[in-house]
Image (cartoon, rainbow, N blue to C red):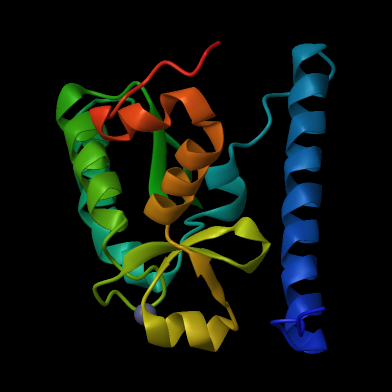
Length: 182
Ligand SMILES: [Zn+2]
């Protein structure tokens, strides 16, 4: 059996982080269900509750969008930020009543985020770490967080495609997209 990649302390920290996230989401779901039943007032959005849920390296991506929304709202728009978080190693910036200009800014920032370390802002690429979480972190920040790289998302895709490929279709390996449904 291979040696555990994390120290016990790092492992506990990771479990705690996952557990807190589950509790947070469960509480939010409960609030929304209760709201739907008409018993309480509108629940707060994740943004109202938790603010910016990404680390400092991505704040320069978030800030110009945030400022532009403030400007537009000051001029009479009604744009609501509902959540700013990380998902699959990328920035997610969720809004309501979003004009096209803001939508384009968000799309661009989300695309840029997968090449920027979420912790320090250095150039970085997405990796899959232990426990199959996807991170966009530079090598030094991965080390600081105690994350061991399992593979890159591209390697994971290639592995999945190899697994899905049936023996008789192996000869068409180079044809790119194939229909694997039956
Ligand atoms: Zn970094």
